[in-house]
Length: 180
Image 1 (cartoon, rainbow, N blue to C red):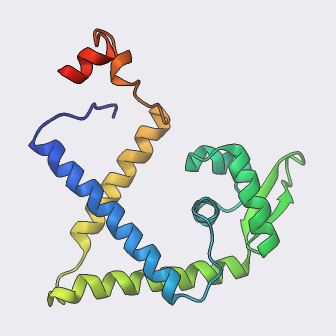
Image 2 (image 1 turned 45 degrees about the vertical axis):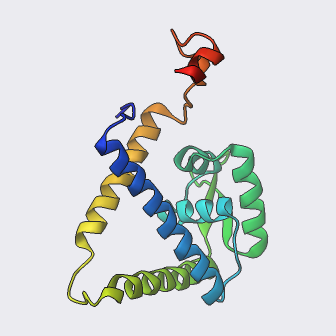
């Protein structure tokens, strides 16, 4: 899925889509922070908890690899989450060297509360235009496809960043790149 962005109408549509996805996610986070009585987590801690909930018994390396976080950041988040009572760690029964991470009942209750709040915010927004009969199936399908594509791309390509324009082959000097 290593496709380079194009300057086209389609690219413009994807720019709008990217802005919308980021804006919706931010609105959900803002509302949840104001209306949900849970201990706030940093973005990294939230990513770690979501991974642990989806992958019980994972290792710290699994979390780093699966979430795209740096291992040191995962270790720091795990220490903080353990201190808050959200995770437990135990030695693997088969390989005593491996540490397995599980969410606690407190974490399960907390994520349940958050998901309920998130769903409520989305449902109210979805139905705000009076389209109470419209189901969000198409949006779920489209966003699921985007997530799957992004995860597959990360799995094969990692988080490679493009070199600055002046370092691309045949780009010439920085001044000529700006002048073009």
